[in-house]
Length: 275
Image (cartoon, rainbow, N blue to C red; front, side, top):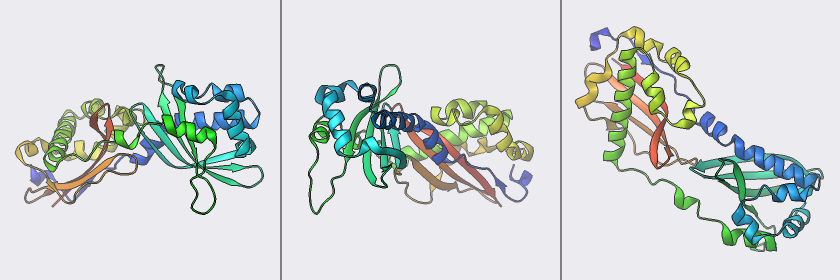
């Protein structure tokens, strides 16, 4: 098999950040609409964008006072430099720019309702000053009902589990290459990746493997080796780098996985074969 390989075959990875940007776009839309309602003094519309748990702890009048007191009614634009989600929970961290030129740091947490729509679950505004933890009454109430989002993060799998995950992914990929269709890999991947690509696009990306006549199913009884210990990234993803100890050609992999519905699901794959 390895004699069929000439040079190096490189496969492009679908960037994980693109998946995150797509998956969290609904939250940014909700946040921008919420602050637009605040700017136009449509407080009832803004209030209706809160989750039921949020409404139980904060009245519409309290929300109005919070928005006005913190100059959020002067909303001009938003910048979210940290986005994350898992299952039905999500978070945006960033800042609001006001018409007067101020920048207000905010953290907003979201929850999906039964219709699959994002609703605002909590709002944090970091207090200014020296060594102060002061907050408005509204933010105190928000903090009392907010869940531990970090507690929902998947913990890092063991090396044995990671190797099994890699082997499973590579075998799905290998069978897809043999089929000359990425249908199996597409169906195997995370839903957030499926929304960013198509089988046709994946076929184009991996066309070099089809043409090489590469049969990676021979790796089924070879244990992949990890070149470094994976870590959970800021979005909850893990990137696994390693290789298969084959000769004379060595197969290298760099796969990304994201926790979806309680399982680690593929969101990116980079396979390289070096002689």
